[in-house]
Each structure stands twice: as C-alpha cells, then as structure tokens.
Amino acid sequence: MPDITTPSAAEGGDRVAAVLAARYGLTVRTLTQLPIGQGTVNYRAICEDDQKAFVKSYPTGTDLHAEQAAIALSTRAAKAGIPGPRVLPNQEGNVIDASAPLAVSVWEWMPGHVTTRLSPPQLAAAGTALGRIHALFADLPGSPPAQGSAGQRWRDIDVDDITATIDQLLEIIAGRIRTGTSDAFDTEAQRTLLERRDQLAHVPELLADLPAELTVQVVHGDYSPVNLLFVGEHLSAVLDFRPPDPFLLAYDLGRMAFYPNTVTGDTGWLDAAATLIGAYQQAHPAVATVDVRACGRVALLQLLKSLYGVRQHYLKPGLFQDDLDEFWLLRHRAVSVLLAELAVTDTLLTELADA
Image (cartoon, rainbow, N blue to C red; front, side, top):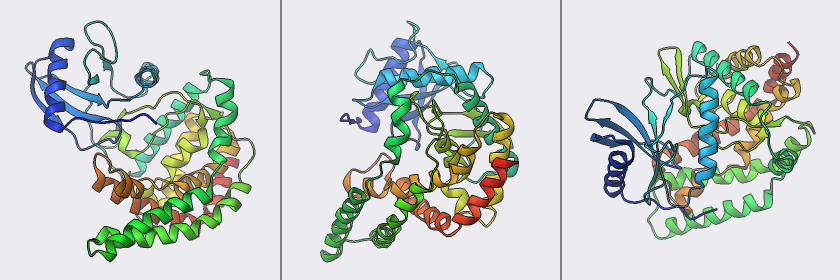
C-alpha cells in the first residue's frame, strides 16, 4: 500500500483554494472541511457567485489513475439516469487536477442528507439504484485474471493472521491498563476483540457453505447509506464509486442489505433487508439466484474478518477516528446478531431468491 499522508487542515484548505482559483476559475469565498471520508479530505466550497462545489483532495500516494477510472464509472451511471453529481473538469478538461502537489477533483454540490437508518421508501430507492447499477455494469470488461481470482482471494481468509492481529491489539490494550492510561474505549475494545477471536471459529463452516460460483463483475464498491443522499424519501445522489475492479456482486448487495446500523437498529432489520433486496431484484431481474441467497453470508464473513476501526485506533488512526471507533462497535454488534440469526436470514434469502 502506498504511503498516504495529508497536510494540516489549514494548509490543505489554502492549497485547495489556490487550485480552484488557478485551475477552475473559481474564486472561493468560504471553504469548509467536512467531517466525512477516510480516503480523501473533503470540502464544501462556496464561491463568489454563490456556486457551491464538493471538493475531494487526494492524499499523497493516491493512485490517481484508479480514481479517474472510478470517476468514469460515476459518469456512466449518471448518464444512465442514476442520480448523482457531475464532476467538473478543470480548465484543460481533466477530471482530476494534479498540477499541484495536492491533487483534487471538483463536483457539483448535490442536495440531500445522509441517513444511516433508512425508511422503507428509502430502502426501496436504495435497492432500486443498486440493481440498476449492477445491471448497467454487468457487461463492463475486467481482466480475466481479476475476474477469475477476485472471488477466490476474498475466500482466502487467514484466521491465524487475523487472530495474531487481535492478540497484538489486546497486548497494546493490556499495556495501557498496566500503566493506568486506559480509557472507556479500551474496555470496549478489549471485550469485543476477545469475542471476535472466539467468533472466528465460525469462518471455516461459513466458507464451506458458500456456493462455489458467485458472480464477479464491476460493482459500485462502497455502496452504503453514507454514500447515499436523500431529499425526504427521494434518493438524490449515489456517491463515491470505487475503481472498476471486478468483485463479488453479493458483496455490494449484502453490505447494503445488512448494514450494521440497520442490523443493530431495531427488530425490523430482516424486513428492511427484504424491502431493499426485493426492490433490487425488480431493477435487476437477471441477477443470479445464487448471489441473492449468498449475500447475507458474504456480508457476515466480510464483517467477521475485518478489524476496520479498532485496528486503526491502535496502529494508525484515521482521519476521523472517533467515527471509526463507533463503527467498529456497531460492526461487531452486527456480527453477533447475524451469527445468532443465521438460519432465519438464510431462510429469508432463499424465499427472496426463489420468488
């Protein structure tokens, strides 16, 4: 992984404003760093003509060719009627400006708000948009090695390696406890990491029960409530497409249908999943039944093998680490719920797939 570094907030903001003036002809009146995103530093720019723009600042080391390919996916989706922002090219027509050390892309500002607890109409809208995206991207080419190996790479879960990382994190926490410097999160992290170490025993059985053939294609790559904007019940924008690396379709679907905030929010999470997946199937009737049946287990396995959030807390803090801490705890609770309700979830997905 490349070494990615970011400048201070003040320094970064000054650099962004200078690029917008020199390369986009935009005179910035106010530039506000937004408390969102981990891979980029994001801003809302209000210019002298009251034009608003969303600005992504890419840290040093970012693969800009991959990000350009991601922007191409977003553009393809928007042209097909998927709601989303237009990227604003610089004065030379480039979608990413890399003329300065701080590369940026500039987007039209979209109305709406993020909600992590979607209502039934919002769930249906999100499922419909994802189904349309998968149908639209189904014929996009991917390199044969990538198509053949993406699913297998995902299945190659090294439980021993994950356990070793857990033990490393637990030792750091134990050291903080010994020196009297521990805090409330250390207590929660210790508890959840010990539970996760035990839960990893389920991985081999869950993998063995997955079908051998799951669809691999270009997907959104980060489809979740935090990348959707709503105006009331209306979906106003799908954001942050990732580069077009072929991956499991069931991953995109399962991640959204069984999002941690949904699963841990109330007892209606199975109904929420059914609403989203039903709308998805209507928008993408060609989806393979095997992908629908497997999406819950794929979501569970992804959560099980991931230490996202807690690993950053102790080894390399993220841009908004408090949010990552909270997300780790939510994801861990979701694992516990999905493991406990695995049979019920499997039954629901079978019924939906066979409907």
